[in-house]
Length: 563
Image 1 (cartoon, rainbow, N blue to C red):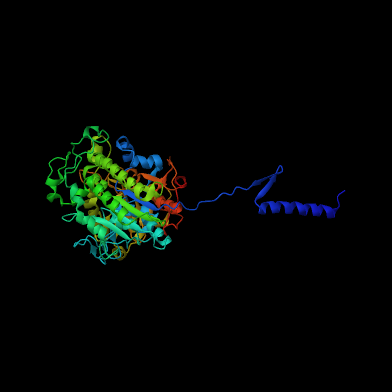
Image 2: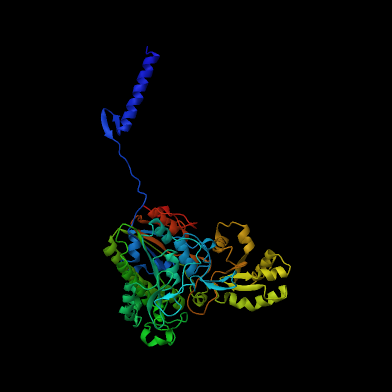
């Protein structure tokens, strides 16, 4: 029988053997020694360059409708080699350019970042403001005031800011768009440069003294080269127009006209219409505007040496002509189809240049939109779909009469914009009314109007926490310091707009459903139909880069996207 002392000796020897094997990285198994296989966790993908692409007014179904016409190197390359989110949505309203670009890059919504519209009524200074305007800075590259811009109204950081901070400002951020807001807001507070296109009689890329005191030599040289003049030519279709079966007939009553045109059909004679359509500004409303943007982005890629060293840079590019064309001709037009087929070619040019300069597999790209768009109401009406383009316009006189009757004055309302009614709180107080009672009284009146589907008050936005549906979307767009007192939602298909062309801005699904594509370094190949939301983009890129999320982030990383 083993004594207690011997048992303790054997037990100690057993544990010493296990401990020794673990220290030396070996385990005994059937008299054979096997090495331990250590696995390493990769924390970051470390692309040399991140390229963020926002296509202005791109509905999700532009991917599927025009798919058979796309080449292999643009949209199809992103889908086939990367990851596509098929059920991607804006989770707030209003759905417009300024809030859209800001939400993509901040990872949050207007409730937090503060950009509640392209323009909005500022309650503190009692006047309308523009999302990117800033007269404390001067224009660089033009003698006009078109460069007096900055991101100062954006309350939080962007993914581009966080990359700059993470790299001790050594990583570059360059932002480019035809529209100033499409460059200024994605560039964030710390961009090395943001450039936008000034048309009229100049046709130059410009910027603000917020970024620099003069244009870099390469921008001056690009402007002086006048490559933009090559696009002063007839806008014809890229392919035989008879193959454009995915859009409506070319001659119809749903499309707008360039000044001087008598019909809205191809070709559009840019040269002969030039002076009547503000010169170079006309190019923005043709497919050529996107090509001008791509030309400049390619020059920036080269001249700024983006993605050349081991420190990640960021190129933010917004293609704005898709929005101008959609507004003028409508989402079902031949012009929109041609614009997307030509954009596909421009994307291929960009990706080929990235392959050559940065290296295939060394950069990461995402592509999305800043909002969708609705079909032209007259087109829907002709196809027996309930719709109207009168919206709030038809209610204004009735509403003013109501204010006089109920409150004795129309001064109780200071502003109506972005689907919101702003009350004069001092007038309400002088009428000896509770503010929430005044809000509810006006909301109940608005609910009686034909075009209005539902209404909510600021009191409801403050008191409740909505998690789905239209109220969730409205609440995400409601900023306590900047938004109004009563929020209106028009019926699906109802808009305030002209008889021709398409628009956007609502909480309805045709304005919220947009594409989201990723491809390149650190990105899986695949797809998902699970709901994703615009604020998810920035934290997804932050997780890929291993950097801090933008400081107002409310979205979450899309885990399926990342390797």
